[in-house]
Image (tube, rainbow, N blue to C red):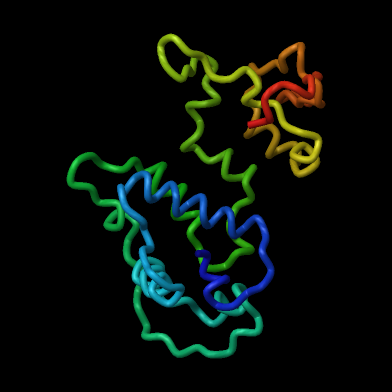
Length: 193
């Protein structure tokens, strides 16, 4: 659970899903939950062991109504030690990605679209990228819905959509390429990336 929920916040927004995304990513890397626990308190203890004790400002950002601030002062655990592996090293890009999402202050977590611009996903924007030697990436990988496009400024659009990408001719919803031109996609095709 995101720490703001453990601290009693009642406003559920996408930033909670961003926290969850990071937890799932970390679990895939570690092979076990990053913040295990039977209860919210157990999980909070594990979160504090990694992120350190939240500051008063971070507590206020998580829940302005939370007034108790009685935690032992624990320093953050270095991310490289959290992801130290006995078998294979974790890439610096993966560690950076997770560390940017797992922050106490929900307002400084990136949005879902901003997450997709992280260098961890740069290989997907390589024109020669493939899922396997026999399977290309989905042709609609860089096709975004009107709602997603409305959330993009030009800088975000340039980072998300490679300049070489041209929307498939069968795109029923408006699809934006890096240059801002659109295409259409039929309703029965796959959802946007």
